[in-house]
Image (cartoon, rainbow, N blue to C red):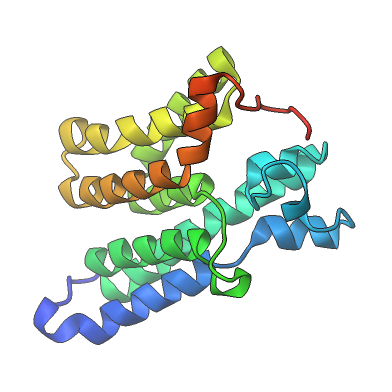
Length: 206
């Protein structure tokens, strides 16, 4: 484990971690994968989102799985590389950068995904037991209610609390708390549809 870098001398490293995380996070895997597969522009169907749930609406589960993997692992890679060269503080900053990059990618005029897979990937890189907890909560909620958005909202709400109370990972809990607020804000339309009973269910096309 590398020694933490002093904040007084570390700003170039932390800035590099932020930029690296942002650029990695901004890769729009959902859009790239569906175009390479001949499915056109994923933004033209369903919710118009570039994430896994909307890719699933193409009916191609393998494309959705690849999107999930790509969007998650870019968060994981950002964290692990930053940790290797800058320590835990740089890893947290890179994770934040990756999340912001996914949501506001420079390549797509800052119109990206909603961050769920990247949130999970960041967790995996920072503290994998919390990633398992997040995934377990998501799967349980999805099995019960069949709403991807609701599953993500509940899992992201509980995860920072688990990190803080159960795992005593305060710095990571603080980061994930901030990301949860952003994730909820990005899901404001989903929340409105959930309240109205018009939210699309998992696997539903259109």
